[in-house]
Length: 299
Image (cartoon, rainbow, N blue to C red; front, side):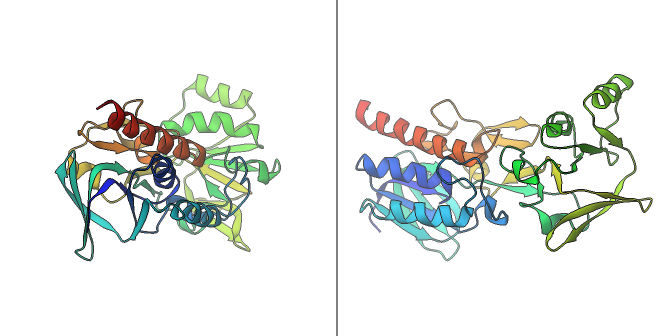
């Protein structure tokens, strides 16, 4: 296969945004996509200007069709498993053994959410068990909400969630509050629950309640948690990219221009930033593409 100007691994919002901007600058681009975006578990994507409340799969399908209309863009529907080479000559190998070649490399592979092993939690992830009130909060219409502690980052989450409804903070053995901390939450109207969580219950496909270890049932319409995350695919690790630790897990270290520590390699979207949103991912992709064009023009 002839070499492309740029290879983009990951075809969700960040990757497609990168491809669109590069194509409009007359760069030839290959977008390698395994078809498993992070928000595939959500039925609606909110707080996305112009697409508020739409199914994220539908937004992606429409976006991909628009990007595919540019003759500079080639889509490779496959899972990328390895990368070799250096700036100016990268080769990405797919799970089926095929390869694609390019001068530059943009990683947009995203992250995978790691949830606590609580029965019933995973089935509701993305709709009524969520992590972001700005993306999923208004729709709960002020109903009873919960925050499930997973670590120190849950403290900030429990302080902000009452904006969207009366909140119970389930410590679940993950956090110990000081007396001052307890008074702070009480002042915010947050109910502190120290009994461990046994399971999560659903009715008609939506969250109904949290069941505690002592048998009590706390009715809820939404449950927030801060998941740990890990890199999807592992390409950044194998390339030797530097990482930064965050309360959510490690992310790829990038500069303001989205460059990684490896020459010629950029990283965009959830894998290289916190916080996360569709809007941020799109902006990252645009910015990385502009940086690549700047490099080509300025030498």
